[in-house]
Amino acid sequence: MRIKTEEFFMLEALHLAEKALNSGNPPVGSVLVLNGKIIGKGIESGKTTQDVTNHAEILALRDAIKKGFVKNLHETVMYTTHEPCIMCSFAIRHYGVTKVVIGLNVQDVGGMTSKFNILNTTKVKKWTKKPQITFGLLKEYCQALTDKYIALKGKSIKGC
Image (cartoon, rainbow, N blue to C red; front, side, top):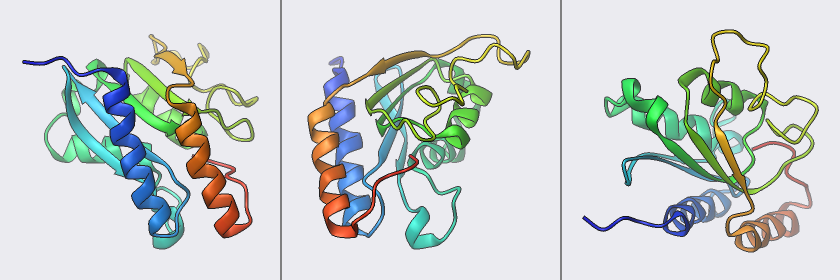
């Protein structure tokens, strides 16, 4: 079996982000990986579905759960084009995702870089282990999609 690189998985997330952008949503895509295999995918769709919970990270978690991986989520790595927001960060911590690899940070409501540092908090007793965080993987590609979205919509991305 060939071990896939982090860039491969982020490119998969970027492909999903392009789909989100093409459907009128912010360009956010997420994949959830277990032992080198993608077990969950999420395409940002909150704007087009008018459901704020349809963020890419949550949809990737839901996809993995639907496929029967709920008991393995604490062994997974999430690759996401944008920093998970507060809501998504809560879900990541709740399920114990081991590592989160992020393309771009989102300071306004980011789950780590904002004042709401959900990904690193130690104040929730049942969240015993913080995920390892990596920022900036393929950042320039994530930024290019964000710039395209801003140009199309005339807005900035304020969440994941």
